[in-house]
Amino acid sequence: MMDKIKEEIRITNGRYRLGYHLMTKGGWMNDPNGFSYFKGYYHMFYQYYPYASEWGPMHWGHARSVDLVHWETLPIALVPGDMESGCFSGSAVVFEDKLWLIYTGHHYIEPGDPESFYENQNLAYSEDGIHFTKYEGNPVLRMPSDNTKHFRDPKVWQEGDVFYMALGSQAADGLGRALLYRSRDLKSWEQVSVLAKAKNLKEEGYMWECPDFFRLDGADILLMSPQGLEPDGDRYRNLNQTGYLIGTLDEETHTLTHGGFREIDCGHDFYATQTILTPDGRRVMVAWMNAWDSPMYEKADGWAGALTVPRELRVVDGTIRQSPVWELKQLRQEALHDGNLECGRTYDVPRTSEVLLAVQDIGEGTLLTLTDGTHTLTLTPDHACGRFVLNRTTKDGERAAQLHELTHMTLRIYIDRSSVEIFVNDGVLTFTERIYFNADVRLTVHTGAAVGTIYALESESNQY
Ligand code: FRU
Image: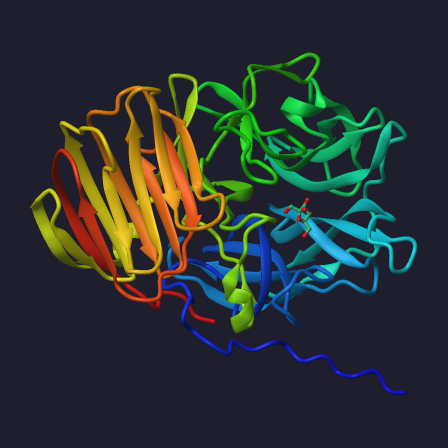
């Protein structure tokens, strides 16, 4: 019998499509990959399955942008099948005038058993930044002997004429870790060190997915997505977490001396980050704006998943702050409101919008509500316990984080049809949420003296 020719899935309903976030033209998306800058364009790749709105054999989807805001979808960059059963997450660097992708080859061993696999690291290259060829010498890196089958998600960067790679791994003793490798040509790699390793399963996990290592504002940071952490009060409430270890790299041993693991976002829908150092020197991060345990109601409509807005990172007082990149201001259309917001009054907010607020004299009870009548998101200070609490009307809807000063704060909120990203106090805390608004949103501030601006944002900023 002839193989059925696969058809790419199509969008059947646009109700939850995002206006200015990067998503697929149809089909499944997870992690951002290969965030890079090449020949005048930012490039973003992502874990992609074009034939269903479910995870499947991983391709690399591809988009490019001149400004980090308007993205143009390009042909699929990597297709599995000839050398591996899936092209898993990885990164991209420019070398000898080519854009190189470094990705994990995921190989099934026993047909029908997804737990029976091995992983190795591979290259593909392109001269035009559109068409990619897998390197004939793949794989370029195989697993060391003190490792389990978990060996993936290479993040490569260049220092002088040396390339370094941070790689997610599970040590043979069952603990998560990040391995450090180096190379001069991307093709032959030697292990430098175990950059960092989980101190135990409960607090630091059994596998560190999507590691990323960089120096920022004088600190060395390992950003990663550990699996297997146990919930601990308000912390670690999602299936898997994303966060960082911050400290100092020992230049001799190439190991990171660091404090405890900190989550980088407090919401339900944030996972598998990747950063870029932009040509003008900013450290900019994106993440998958979902989580493996998110319901993803858009699956019914022929697609699943999106990326967060790009966020610039800074380190202040030993912790990471995030702010939406300045380029996003281009999305602003008219200001629908500018000035004081009356307590208890309802303000209409378009489904693609940005809200900037400064609130003083915050009392007890709910501070703010966003609702379309059916789906509601609230923000509530818990003065007694020094927590700031988000609630959305879903099962397990609460997420919260420590915030000591709760009587005044600033909020910057990006709303995009089925997502909300909240930046508290210039990004000291962020909450990233998928919430499936299906009508215009109404905003109410219930306590305190609020002043702010509501902007309608461009709602079709990407080309698919
Ligand atoms: C993280 C992850 C990566 C892997 C990819 C597969 O979400 O599990 O570790 O490379 O997704 O799609």
